[in-house]
Length: 201
Image (cartoon, rainbow, N blue to C red; front, top):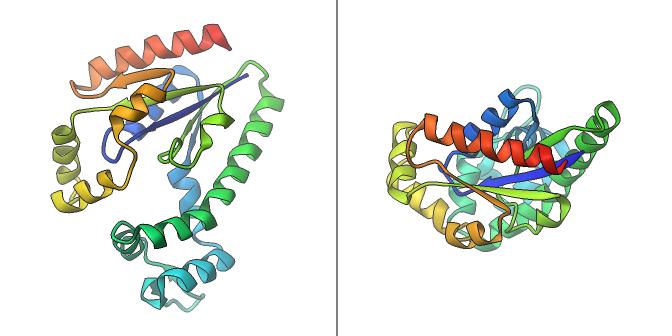
């Protein structure tokens, strides 16, 4: 079995590349989806609203939930609060990651598992994987793609600035995938990297 940490910066195509690996036969893990589930837990809701204030709560008959857009607005403007929230969420993501790894390992000892982890290097997760892959594209390309999804330019740039520079991540990775020039070219790179990963597994 080979575990792979996949990362990049905001809007650079991590999820697209994860899906490509999945179509080639890799097992995949989307940490954004995992975080979405973690944020529904009553204990987590209580801890995060304690850090960010009750403005992030949305009231429902079944109990409060977190307004993720409001959360993002606060934490990407306040690095101190972002760090506190990450200390609540990261251990839960890591537990889920390890559980997934154990389950797949038992089912398929020759598996290649690709874990999409946005803050892989920032959170020190690199040590948990056999190999790491960084997806990148030109900043303006990322901003344009995000704008097409309704993300304002100033918000996109603020989120990018909150992350480790992509140039540094590229140097730290075992493999890099350039997602600047269209799906076909990206797919060809993913296929090449996947063959190399299979050979190393």
